[in-house]
Image (cartoon, rainbow, N blue to C red):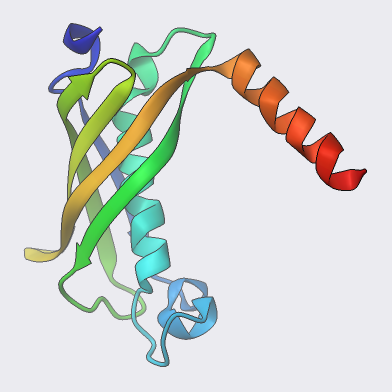
Length: 134
């Protein structure tokens, strides 16, 4: 399995809007890209890295995120994230993440996703939802 994913690279980018700021997200009180949105950008890059390597019945779910948000990106900034698969152990896929605002490194870290069977996973989630509504 590791040969299929190892070394895969994905990219994701965004232009920071007011809705992406720490103020709007409730994670701070300044008008810069909020860390929760940075995490989302990093996860989007991980998905882009492996999307064309997944079988139709497979998907991945995020299970661990460690992001160092190193620099501020004001509204209007173009932030680009990259993800590289650095390790695969069984169904556990590890990605090294970097994000840049122009030439500045503004975030780095690790995201771990688990490879799961799409139908089995959605069935388990549906069962949880039915239990929660009971």
